Length: 288
Image 1 (cartoon, rainbow, N blue to C red):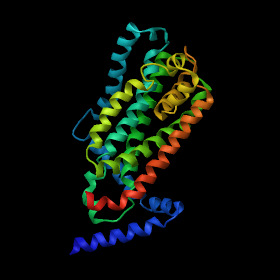
Image 2 (image 1 turned 90 degrees about the vertical axis):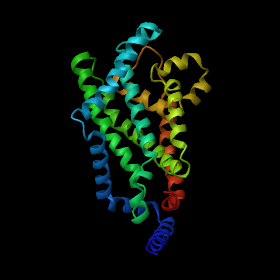
Image 3 (image 1 turned 60 degrees about the horizontal axis):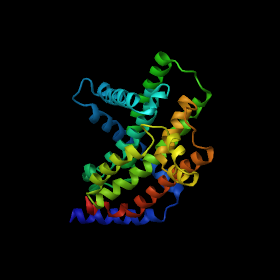
Image 4 (image 1 turned 180 degrees about the horizontal axis):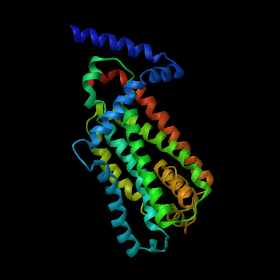
């Protein structure tokens, strides 16, 4: 009886939300900022709980990964001519890891909070948003350590393009949040999404210019096909990071128009993911 009353109240709240404007949605999310802060803090604590070296290990993993990839690919491929190849790899693996972890972790963000989803009304967008923010904080710390290493140990020239990093982080966040909205509700409807996503990201790692610069692809594809290739928003995020930190490389970079098209894809991904989430979120209490 009580559960039926709670579900009826939640259904009424969801139907009333459908008529809300975007400004009203933003106000509602702002009102739930304390819940958002608590969820982000909880996720960060859970990630490192019970481990004295949790944060250090999470930083060590990409370092070891980049070290192994540098030894293998710098010695065995034509990328040996790329100066600071390890820095080149860091600029690829850090954005990739952020988007991958946000997407995979968002798959279960609704299911693992099923108790409050069933019993309490709150803007459900808070759940995937908290996943993205937690990983964004981790990315910020990791990127800061990478920049310290780069400019203290490697000592490349400091470029004015570094001022673009906050803008690039915005596109990271927009893309990751759009995917988080999409996969959180999709995996709640169809539990196989999480496994298909892991497979897709495994393939995407080799298709996306992480181990190699996008200029290599540009040399081997006609211009129209390369423009389509650069619609991959993850590729754009990686190339923008390389441009901001390392400047021009040994291979021709994507044009500004191609980067702009990819950046627009990041924003469209956010809009599309949020539209799907907003349309299907009223079904979440009965699915979890």
